[in-house]
Image 1 (tube, helix red, strand yellow):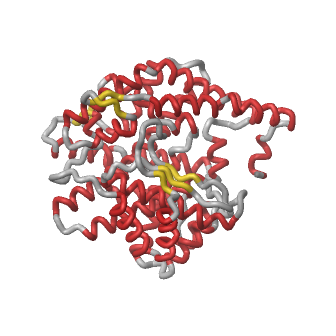
Image 2 (cartoon, rainbow, N blue to C red; image 1 turned 90 degrees about the vertical axis):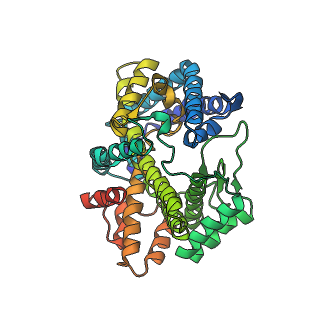
Image 3 (cartoon, rainbow, N blue to C red; image 1 turned 180 degrees about the vertical axis):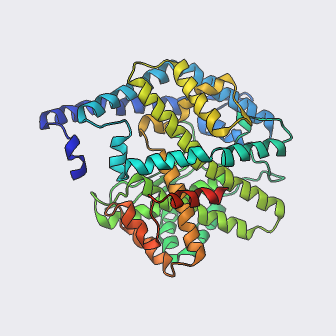
Length: 442
């Protein structure tokens, strides 16, 4: 709270800002979210929600992927007038707020809230962008060859190059046992906390019309308990999403003892438990599988998840930085926003991925950009951190790793990243920290 003092307005202005907030950016973000949830995308004569349509972008059948991709692009494009107006309004509101509070750049407020130095974020973004050729460009070129194609279309990006001969949906109970088993193998204490989410029905898992897409964990208040929202479809990716969100929930339970003001960790560190849970589950799935083809399937899924967490999120961050800078010069058109969107994705995914024009409307489903400005780099920070943290765990260099890890989660927001990582011999400002995280993918 003291860190924000220099950016606090007078009491009267703060009261006005608070009262206007209910009809400001939050109201526009709500309109965006409700509109997106109500949209239907016709695929094979079936009106699908965005979650259901996006799920088909990883379907083994290429025609199905193409049909779903075109339907999403058409649906988002048809609503671009509203979405562009909402985006421009939210961008302008932030510019006004930053100007009055004297933040030096659009990212400054988020970095202050995240308790992370500007130079650490800048170095992370630069390191990931420099790694594009050896990570995403290289991988998608290989993937095109695996598919027997000269290049991938954008709807091929999330299709597995190795897939199961039959696509059997995994029951929720099986996913529960896999995830809790992975947590238990690492720490029985964490698994015990995780089981409470299932035993007490703290998880809303099935997709349904009108339901918010994606997945998240809601901490509520420390005196109660968190809830998890999923859109579980029975795929391996959904199992990983369950592991991810359960990690958030466990983190929130452990840190609740710090009270309302200090239970919440900074956003980049809040991704630690979730991504670490994914890593534990991935390792458990891989260890349990003896069939070489299925192991390749699991490995391909993990590589693509890592690329989506690191490369895609930094691409989204780059796009977000660009639109905030451009909005300060004036209102942006759909064409201008679309051009920036296409530019960052061409840069991040490389020449092996081809984009049709309708992809320029896909920014409309990146709800974080409207609801939580500059949130997404936290995923990349968390991925680098967890890759490095897991390497320390594997090395055995820290004998009481599990105890230190749980202590880190219990700390909530009481400590900054330097103090939290020091017991593991890690420093996020060290270039070796970032490279170690990137090298695991390479």
